[in-house]
Amino acid sequence: MAETIITTEDLQEFKLELLDNIKELLGNHSGHSYKRWLKSPEVKELLGISSGTLQNLRINGTLPYTKVGGVLYYDYEEIISVMEKNKIHNKF
Image (cartoon, rainbow, N blue to C red; front, side, top):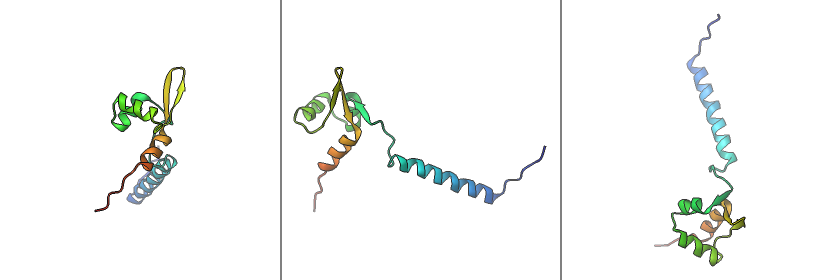
């Protein structure tokens, strides 16, 4: 059986290729790995809010949702959009 010698340069090249592949994968998800549709418990955990607060966000129209067969679903992109729209920049 033939032996293959791996040099430091080979390892460096492998590392750079691996990093490029990881960056490409992360770029495809905009740096986020997420499901598009989240159920209420997932949204509560994501935002760190109670059931009542989530219900208020639905009732007052702050957070859009979809109801399918009695289950409420929230679009991850909409949640991020709502958070961005309501961002407050205090100036000192």
